Amino acid sequence: MRTPVPVPPLGEQKQTETLLNFWFVEEGQDVNEGDDLAELVTDKAAFNLPAPAAGKVVKLLVKAGATVKPGDVLAELECPE
Amino acid sequence: MSQTPPNEAAENAGRDGAFYPKAPSEGAAPVPSGRARAFPEWLRKPWPARYDTRTQNLLEGLKLTTVCQSAECPNLGECWNRGAATFMILGENCTRACHFCAVKTGKGESLEALADEPARVAQATKHLGLRHVVVTSVARDDLDDEGAGHFARVIETLRRYCGPELVIEVLVPDFHAREDCLRTVLAAKPDVFNHNTETIERLHPPVRPQGNYRRSLKVLEMAKTIAPAVATKSGLMAGLGESPEEVLATLDDLRASGCEILTIGQYLRPSPHHLPVAEYVRPETFARYEKHALALGFRSAACGPFVRSSYQAEQVLARAR
Image (cartoon, rainbow over all chains, first blue to last red; front, top):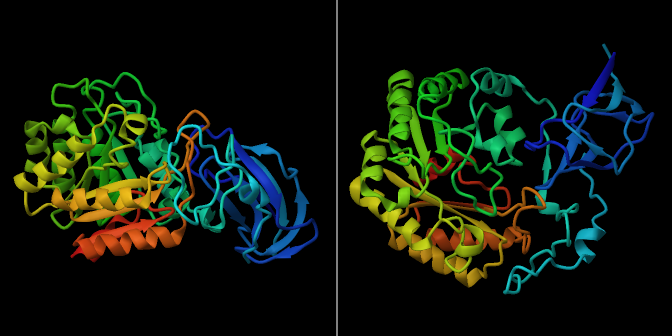
């Protein structure tokens, strides 16, 4: 089952200036639920974005250094049914 | 899994010191100039792996404003995931323009338009199953009673709808230290009366130009005199350019005004249009502030980088009891 990983709300109201600073993972990597996938940075703090479920990272859809907003899908995981 | 990211930028960058006349306290992390994009390790937060959107959906459905969103609080994910939120009443627009705050400045909504807000706050409190609710507001210098009557209506409605066991904490503006306003709020019998001093006396003009340090102390003192049984609480931001000695002097002033509960957290700049962060205060410094506060006689103190005035308010009050 493909599971999208979106940008969460992060407390930013303007929601225009969240930076995907870097990926902790690569495509093809297996992850457990809660493993850090990426670092997201707002004006107020750095956030570790965790895997919402265990699975394999099949696609990183956004490059490190890009500006993203809540709801944007950053990656796709292939998770067991 | 937790990994350490590359953070050379934070370690090597210069300090944006144009605004602040004083040196940072010993051991503080430097702040990159311009827009901060690198934070010290202690300003890293994990987002919940299983983020529950029920709080968000409920608040949006009831058209409620929260300071969690308006102030762009970095604790939002953690707090909302466990069903805790801080309601911000009296509209989305503040009549003041503090230079640290992300809340919009503008014309306030009419009280008529906010007539059902007390009921909506009570409904959300009940649905979320809160045992301790925090209600704050924008400043409403445009209203005759500066919003005190609306605060009282919210407290009374919460009490009526959610029962006597609900702990109600109000975080109020300074009401220009008007006794009539304070009496109105306190007559509704909140359990905790919180008014933030926000910063040390010297930094009030640049940080909180329409506020006044001595007036805020007076508000806390008056509240304790009017309603001695109500716990008084206040909060400060660190990292605006204050020295540790100035923080400790402020704690003395707060205790002298009868304040019983203290919070201190790191100032985090909401946008490039707000005051720059002068320093990222180390967790050990916050720990020293907390220890000092308890030694001074505060019944409870919560000091740490991500502490906000309503953060874990239930636990902070429990430590005071």
